[in-house]
Image (cartoon, rainbow, N blue to C red; front, side):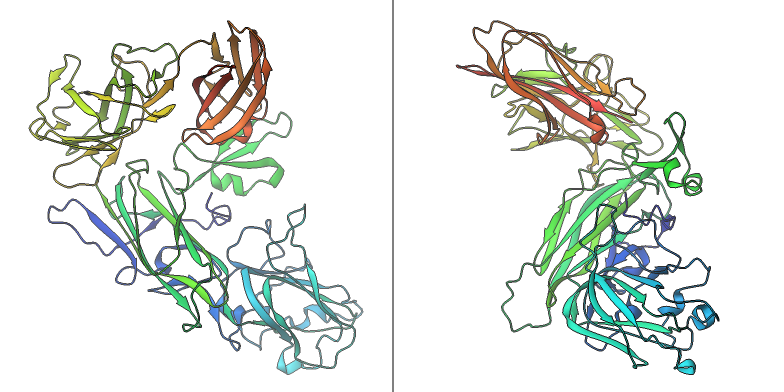
Length: 628
């Protein structure tokens, strides 16, 4: 989810007229934001504690006489927020349900104030509370507030100021405050609280007297950079619409210091991530039936009209990729990544930065640019099998780890108009050997015009027999490779010899001649174990009592004495997600159940059964899908 801004209903499609640089063939376009391109403000969705200008993006920095209140963007001036923890726009509210605006407290105009709001005859004003959320943690050393100059006698004579750094929250997810100052009697029209510099996000002002009062402005001052900030782009659409394939992304950065002569050894960094989607709603919205607990998917507009206990959201994994692995920037230079891991084609692109620095040193983002081009296919599907075993019993190809094996990779593409490709790259473990390439169920041989091998895959081109809308057919590639891990992912990318951005291939049912619908291959050290089955290939933990739990059934056979058994769940990269059981077991039939599979986000996972005997260790793997 894009923080809280999407839930606030402010995320809208954004179509930009980008500064484009097009290659000689007219295939690849480049989007540039920052210096030499579109402004950072033009793509901004969320900026918390960040200084955003046309050319530069960095944590906000202040001198001792700059009012932080005037620099932040105030997005909510109502009676109180629904959420406290997510950083974003600044907010101010008063604990009084009179419907009066609170923006007069932070608008920078001393002639606008609370006026008669808290000067009602006979009404005690003791215990009035104002809360100011700066949206991020700022270095603060002075807080001031004062009444309208035309009503200077209505100043606060007794008050308490509490602050929170925005990093400490209670069980109710509300800020934990510490008292900054408590004044029982004051004769100062302009109240000023000075203190050693500290991080402040929330400021809580409470009146301690019944007398009428007026507040025109609150001001906050501090020196140095905000140590933690973030920036999230809008959902970037492209001129002309439609899906795009994404190439490479480059970030140009500069390390900035207010003490350039000092040793630059402070640990400062900026972390950036990207994702791609089909629409401007990375969340799916649901209405909860309060009697049955069942959920019905609804529109975002309908969701906003419901009370909290009647609604819930989930990440829309079907239409949006997860945020990419973080890339860390820690010095001046250019940082580049390939975007070939993103699902393609997708019509929307989004990126975000998280800044971590000090009061004196930060990372500045000067520009970001990425390449994109028109899709080579509307949709793709690929599956892989071991030659000689086109329909493996478990639905996943299995080979002996560390031994060469010959595989068949089938690719089908939906094409229309000018879509098409004349090349394919397949990621392999180490250097592979190409055996043959053919198209169609009759396996018409395809002449390869050029082929490139490296230690991570095969790239082959066949412009003399391109796959186009007019000559579309399933492509079959046979090659020999040696899996070195228990899980090998034979990912693929469509290629274009004219220079378009490669398009990542999605796994799926490419042909009825093969039976895996997957590009995952499992390794095996043998097969001494008996039955190993999952209760369901798809777990749907939505509370309807059907396939809510992950169940694993297995048989241990030919064990002379108990062996150490472990049943665990991993993501496709091999990272441990959960251990169902780990204990000594004798020969027999067993069932392991995980009743909290709802903790998993949607996607595919590996269930691993590991048995350690005195002489050898054996493993079995199965794939399970989690869907809501």
